[in-house]
Amino acid sequence: MRTGRPETKAAQVELTPDDIDVDEYERRKALYGPFAEVVRDLVDATIRTEVDDDTIREIEATIRTATRRLRARQVDGAFGMRRTSDGTSFAWGNAGVGLRNALAPPLVVESDVTGRHWTTVTLGAAYEGVPGHVHGGICALVLDHLLGVTASATARRFTGTLTLRHLRGTPLGELRGEARVTSVDGRKALVAGTLSDAAGVTVEAEGLFISATGPSDR
Image: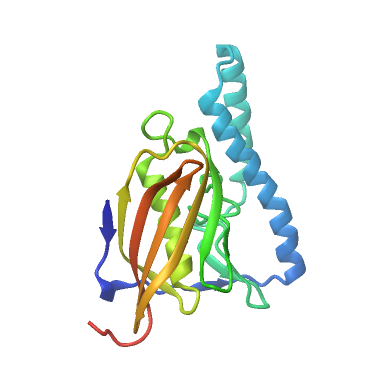
């Protein structure tokens, strides 16, 4: 699968100031993280449950009530990317890593001094495509984010093109993604990565990522 946009169209990320200090940031993180995890578990339970009809209707009513209470005070539009008073940035609505997004796995990317980046994630029933396997679009989400973080280790870059090669189906369950920059040419960084299960690589990926700033070198 190949997705992309013209290299000269790289988006600018606008950080929305959120006038909170580090203590308030940590308080909110401790509050919303477990809350989103409960909702994430609810999504999985909704797919898997085989309880009786009356129980479903009762829980549906409870969820409707809870949703109305949450909507009593909310932001307009998307959460976006915000920064605290000390410069910490956070994108808690992000589809890949959003702390407050129950649709996000969420992904946690780690790295070492050699430039290797990796993430370990467990994808369950909510991410299924072909029965028993991760949807190809979710594989693309995981690899796009991982390769993007890898490309942005030295300068913020955005996806220009992403090419995936599925070697076989990616089973639901624990997976590991790895990525590394293979070359840098001005604003452009070429990144290679893989997604694997316990038996080995299931998806290979290559992405071209472009810095949003500076003159075009095309």
